[in-house]
Length: 88
Image (cartoon, rainbow, N blue to C red; front, side, top):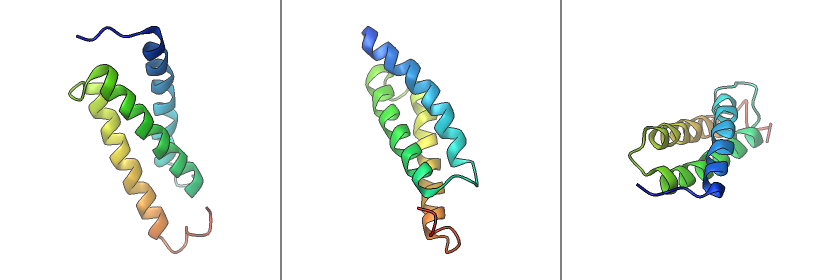
């Protein structure tokens, strides 16, 4: 078990709040492409932190990894949708 530093704990807490926000963004049909890109970037960053702090097999890390994949899929779908390509 790796002991967390105060910095890593703070990042984890902030990351959890950002995860909740960004998870809702990729599910929002009204989110712009820029919103989705920002959400994906944030989720990827949080995923790297979770991997380092909690480990790859931790349930929170696995949940974030799932959110990253769903966010990528939502972004790909939006980017390839002809009616949505104009909202970047």
